[in-house]
Image (cartoon, rainbow, N blue to C red):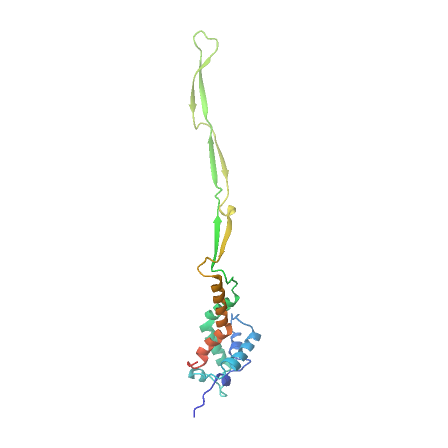
Length: 215
């Protein structure tokens, strides 16, 4: 009778896949102490009795253990495949929100004022004709002529830039817009956290590669 190899036969429960992932460059999802706990939980409580596929079996050493460079290889393959999903899982856990709000929006308004302005002032000049009337002792004004735009221009310039006069404000709107009752939203949030678990999701992803496809 053919004997199948299982997860508990090939992986260490203290220095296994999750510990190996912490050595990957740029890895920041969990530290070494957390990894050791995950290795123990995965092997002893979650997948220890599950059968491994041929793709894993051919990477075992003479003692049927996944160790050394092959352990590192599988850790890198699994992390490369699920890195984006696992980062999103952690985002779910870290998210700060109000479970009874189903509407949230931040609106940012930027305003800029242009202070570049040039003002030109032109002086008006009026000239008068003086003539001596018949038998008059002094000359008197008999007419005048007004000329616009004659004389020195006085120019005033205010210098500035758009960025020097920028301001902004943030308007936040949140709450329940009425399409779902508060009780329904609390029930939905509670059901999500009862049915979804961070480690369970990660372990299920690892099983897709480390165990045969019947689990």
